[in-house]
Image 1 (cartoon, rainbow, N blue to C red):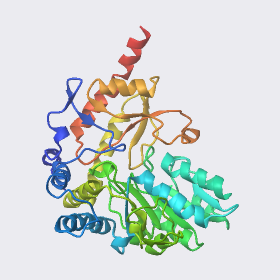
Image 2: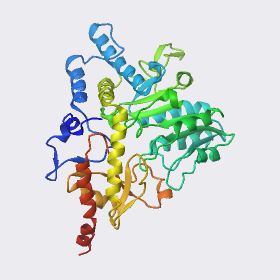
Image 3: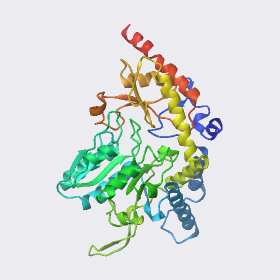
Image 4: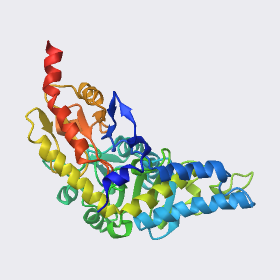
Length: 409
């Protein structure tokens, strides 16, 4: 597999960083991930040595920038096995990507009473844009039921689809419950009925092999900062013919080939029609470096190791009588609560021992209708976490009872 202790040396924040006098134990990887030195160096290299603009200049420096920028696009293409690099659009992140699909595709292809299917487990980025598009077009948002554990199943997709369904927009791995959706089966079923499938890959792409041709996904959104890359950079993958029939949500320099004073505009072909203005050049370059780093470790290796970590943690947590676990058998983050302790208070307790975890609704604010709890704690792992860190996490879980005793004294 790989040597996690050797890998940890690549991450400056894991070497000497302390919180509250303790070494940093970072278990909020679902929110963002730490950055290896190679990514930091790639961004600094651009800013230091060839910091020109992309697709703007007829001189050597600008050409060098173009080469690095487009090389990153090719790296993304290889990483997700897209058919062509023109299917890779650089965005500011998953939120931007999903908004681009909702407004750029949804507004021009949805009509009165058309159906958009989502689940209550979706992130706000894959919920709120569809609410708004439905309001504007007269389409309606309906929900695919989750099974009793919180999993999206093909059976429930089939039950929800009608002859009015035009879009299915779901996370491949949800950001709270962490269940893996059967995307290939969903796409096969949807495409037999002419339904477009939009996938939020923010919590799946960083953790496992992604093959958009195999799964036949129509649109895929993911973020660089959740996979060791810089913030402010993300990707929208779309099948080329769909991108050609999608309207950009922003216009400006770089998105058009010509326009005149009469308002006649000729847009460039994808992906450039969607990348108006100066792009996040250092972000794209850093993302390319991050992906190469991940591929060097191996996505299969990363996925196996994270499943091993999660299994180890769940087994330890299930031995405690003061913890409620809401998704013991999923693959992603662990959603839980310390019994009798408000989630934000519990997060403060973990913080006092140098452990960073998430508390609240995790931008999935209608999931409480399924879980029947308003807020949860979330521990999310990445390949640089260790079993020793999980042991420390478990020891703080045990201290929940001490926290309650101190509170009520």
